[in-house]
Length: 302
Image (cartoon, rainbow, N blue to C red; front, side, top):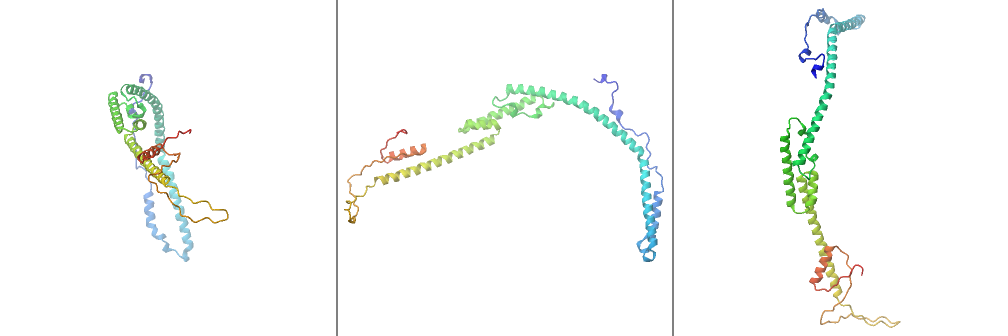
């Protein structure tokens, strides 16, 4: 491309060279004025003035202020004149730097466009490689490293990285399968996050919840069995024998309930419809079987 440019710059041609430099050549009487002021300052000490010479004080004050203003104004005037060549030099250099930056910026656009094309082409190569040796359950975006697109990262090195990633995923999945419970759910979480520690922690949470639910079900079953036992005990108690009804207009006679002594247990029949969890229903049936209580199943539509 350079042969198409009629005039090309060389970096060494842009090195700034000072062909003539004169520093410290400004000759003035500034130092003499300073020395003169230093010698005269004792004459203008505040102790030299009082109400007797107040007019002289005002005059001296005005003179000193005027002299100070005039001296500083002249300094500014000389400074501008002295700095004029430098300001011109500074402006030329600043304009030149802007021109160089403009040219560099235009070239930078071309360079970045080409670099982007190269990264896209390399990304396509990496996607192809992942399709060949990557993990079938994990999309490339889950594990993609931006540094793979750098020119310094060869495809051989990227293939090694991908193989290591696949090995880790397989190892993690084997660890999850070894848990033995909730495997499908845990695999789904892992494949979404690729975080084995988080997945194992979730497995522990599921196990803890399951154990708490089991303990609660056992407690409820025991409570249901206790209630059934209490109801059966009450149902087995004989009913008291009541006396004859009193005649109209007469008070009821006093009597003491008497219970017939039975030589063998009296079998009573009571009907119950129980609403409970499946676990409690099973526990209730086991309890009644253990106590020798005869029962029959009533269909839901009965």
